[in-house]
Amino acid sequence: MTIQVEVLDEAVPRRGALRRFRRHPVALAGLVFLFLVVLAAIFARPLSGHDPNQIDLLAARAAPSGEHWLGTDSTGRDVFSRLVFAGRVSLGVGIASAALAVVLGTVLGGIAGLLGGWVDGLVMRIADVFMSFPSLVVIVVVAGILGPSVVTMVIAIGLFQWPVCGRIVRGVTLSLREQEYVLASRATGAGPMWLLRRHIIPAALPPVSVAATLAVAQAIALEATLSFLGLGVQPPSASWGNMLTDAQSLTVIRTEPWLWLSPGVAVALTVLAVNFIGDGLRDAVDPRQS
Amino acid sequence: MTVLLRIENLSVDFHTDDAVVHAVDGVDLEVHEGEIVAVVGESGSGKTVTAMSVLRLLREPAARVSAGTLAFRGQDLRGLSPRQLRAIRGGPVGMIFQDPMTALNPVLSIGDQIAETVLLHQDRRDRKAARARAVELLALVGVPDAAHRARQYPHEFSGGMRQRAMIAMAIANDPDLIIADEPTTALDVTIQAQVLQLLRKAQRETGAATILITHDLGVVAELADRVVVMYAGRVVETAEVHALFGKPRHPYTLGLLASLPRMDTETDRLDPIPGNPPNMASPPPGCPFHPRCPLARDICRTERPALLDLGDGRRSACHFHEELA
Image (cartoon, rainbow over all chains, first blue to last red; front, side):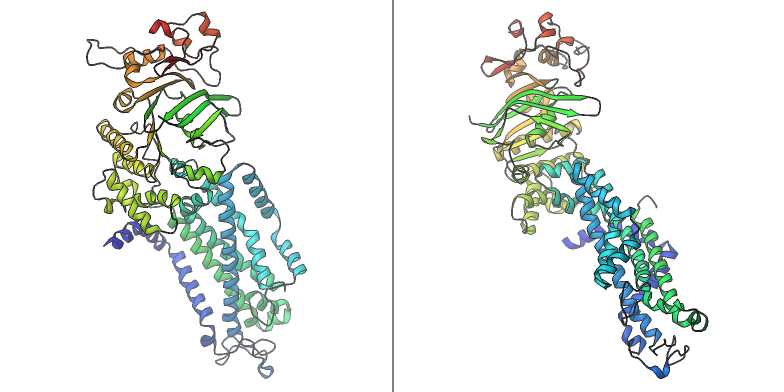
C-alpha cells in the first residue's frame, strides 16, 4: 500500500514527459535504431559468426557475399564482424566520455553556482578556456605525447565537453539558490554538498540529461575522427574510425566501397539517432510543451 | 533566568553598487531561556535581518555583519567554522519562515523534507528512523493522518498545513531557541490563530525560547512575554508585554498602538503615524524617528538618543521618555 502510493505520486509528472517523447516520431525512430545498434554490439559474437581479427589472406578483398555479409578487408578479416565489434568500442567511448563530462560538469557547475564569488569566477573562466580551444588540436597533441589509447581519448573528450554541462548546472543553481526553500534548507543545517545532492541535482537533471545525450553523439563523432587519424583506438582492435582509415586510398574508395561505406554509415546514423533522441528528450522534459 | 542569546551592538550593512544600506544599526537583544520575545516593527526596520544574522544566513560579503557580542549559550557565534554553524542551524536553533508556500521544495515530499532536518543532525544513514520521526513530528503539530500526509507534496497541503510542517521542521531536533519570522503573515486570519496556538504549544513542549518576528501587535499581545520594538534598524524600546501595551515609553510605540483599531472606543478612523520610514541608505541624522515624531525638538535632529535603562526591564531610546511616563 505505502509503496504503491509513492510510485503513483512520482510517476505523474514523468508520464507527461513520456507522452511528449512518444509524440516525437523521429526521436522514437532514433531510439529504436540505437537500441538495435546496442543489441548488435552486445551480441557481436553470435551475430557475426566470425572472429573480427581472424586474418584469412586467401579471402582478402572479397566483395559482400553469403559468407562475408559486408565482404572482407585487405587482410581477409570479416568486415561485418569488425563493424559490430567496433560498435562496442565506439559506443563505449561515447558513453564513457559523456559520463565523465556530465559528472565533472555537474560537480563543478554546481559548486560554482552555489559558492559564487571567486570560486565561480575561477571555474567559469576554466570552462571558457576549454570551450575556446580547438579541442581536436589539443587532443591530437595530448595523444601524441601520451601515446594513443582508449583511456587517454575518453579523458580528453570528457575534459573538453564538461563546460556545456557545467554551464547548465550553474544556471540552474543560480536560480535555485535564491529560492526560499534553499534558504530554509540552509537554516536547518544543510551544507553546500547536501544542497547540491538534495535540491540542485534533481532540478538540473532534465536539462543535463539532454546535454548528456548530445555529448554522447559528439563523443562518438570525435572518437571516429581521432581513430581515423590514428590517434584513438589502435589496430588490430576495430573502431568505426579506424575502419575508415582504409578509405584513405583512392583505389579502395573506387573499387571496394564495402570497406568504408559501412563504418561511415554506422557513424553517421548513430550520431544522428542520438541527436534525435536528444531533441526528443529536450521537448519531453520541458513541461511547457504540452 | 539565564541568558540564552546575547546580541550586542549588531550592525549589518548591505553593499550595493551605488549605496550602502544600513539595515541594522547597533542592535542589542537578549533572549532568556524559555521566554517568548517579540520583535516588532514596520517592513524594513531590520527585524528579519537581525534574526538571519544570528544563524549567519545572510550572504556575505554582500552583507557585512559586525557585532560586539553574538553569543548563544555563551558560545561566540562569530568565530564558528561553517561546520560548527551547520550543527547549530536546525539543531539547537530552529527557524520558521514567513511564507510556507515558498519555503518548501515543491518536488520533495513533506515527510522527506522534515526527515532531512533529522538526518542532518542525527545518524545520516538511518533514513527509516528519520522518516518515522517525521511522521511523529507531523502528528505532533496537528496534521491529521500524518503517515499518509507525510508522503504528499507541498502542493497537496493548504497554507496552514504547510506552516505546521515548517514548525515540525523547526522543532525536529529539540531546539533551545526557535526563530519565527512572521510565521502567520502569509496565512488566512482564521488559520493564524491556530498556528499561533501551535507555536505556543511547540514552545511549551520543547521549552525553547522563541524570537517571534512580526508586525502584528495582536500576535504580540497573544503570545509574547517581552517585546522589542525596532525602527530604522535600531531598537527603540523594549519592555515586558503588559507594560508596553499599558504605557509605551517611546513615541514610535505610542504611534503604533494608536494606529490599532480598538473595540472600546467610538471612532471610525484609525490614527496612522504620519510620513514613511526613512530610506536606510541615507537615514536622517540624530534620532531616525524625528521626522515623524510629534515630540521632536532640536536635539532630536542632531543627537542620536541612547537606549536607556528605565528600570523594571524597560528600555527606551527617546530623549523625552520621561514626558511619556
